[in-house]
Length: 201
Image (tube, one colour):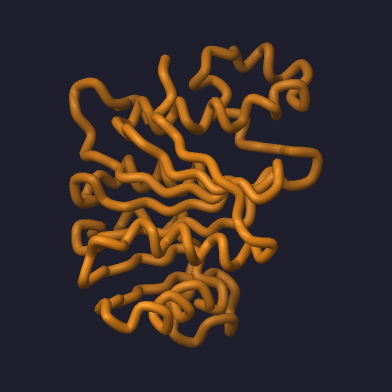
């Protein structure tokens, strides 16, 4: 299976600025942007983008699991919240996770109410010894039996597996910033599920 076409470039030394620039690139042609920030933290990313782009109307709905971290956010676990959301009102869904974005993205696709070609921005971090959701490796034809034997041997295929997963969802292009090997910041447009996209989620 083919991967989406990617554009890869290094960011400044500031990883935070790399995240900001990626999101700015994804919204550059929009005057009004309704954002669902599902892993908002303190909200610094989108507050910075709003300050840097005063010519745009950027409306942010934030979700943060950690109590008291962000007084402007809905408090809760995004994975539990996503299934009940009407995603159709948002132009961009932000998955700035600490870890891997596979499970929240999977939940968004299963929800199915998002706009056609909604913008998705993601942070993809291989933490610890490079661990990733092993389920994603089955998307590039590794078997669960193979993976369970020596999971660490397969961690190097994480990016291939992620790009292949996005391709199977109908994504045609991914903007990819990779400041260091274990951190990847990605932006893409997610089409509505069609006949050639994944259904067994």
